[in-house]
Length: 272
Ligand SMILES: Cc1ncc(COP(=O)(O)O)c(C=O)c1O
Image 1 (cartoon, rainbow, N blue to C red):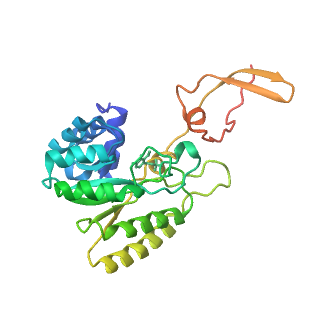
Image 2 (image 1 turned 90 degrees about the horizontal axis):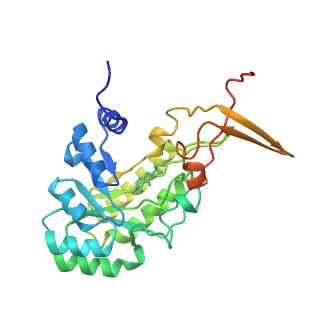
């Protein structure tokens, strides 16, 4: 039977059928998720540098929203006051991730509200009595070390007394997928047990139930297939041999864009 879903819709449908909520980075991804049938309460929208109109649209659609700038938080407070529960994305000033291009939590990153601007964040929250129910941190992609997530937990812990309405600590995504042979991915079982411990400790310390959220992205899909191409041309030039193939960065942009390593194997050799 031919599917009438687009590839994007199909991916979201798989996530939905697995019983997961979904994390979106753009308002159109949010609309796609609604189209596929996600309940708005199971959709999270974590934006970066978007216009305030998009945040308003997400509110109209009853989506969970994380706000990542003081300017949008100010506009949010002025318009919605305490009438809509919201999350804030914190930049924790933690350097993590496979390389600088995929590190989002360091002290020069554009993502999130710098943890050093807590005073400004609190001023806006108090001015409009904004109901902040989620603290969010996403430090980057390809994070192998469980300790990075524990560092994020320490940042949450340092903030929790300032945010008595927070119920959710969102640790973002970033689980490492092994790419090269013998490489190891994030130890998910260890991550689970370590995060459980710190969550329990924080719940006890602050005397309220706290929920941990994660937003794995590439971890769910990176090992789901192979990218197959054919060698068209071989050019020998001293010790360098170029293999010219029938694809390019139009099909797989990550090596050029993110300095990503993708292991290559010859699986069928044909001689003409
Ligand atoms: C806010 C947020 N959450 C989760 C992810 C997913 O990250 P990853 O694919 O490394 O798990 C990203 C990726 O950029 C992100 O920006």
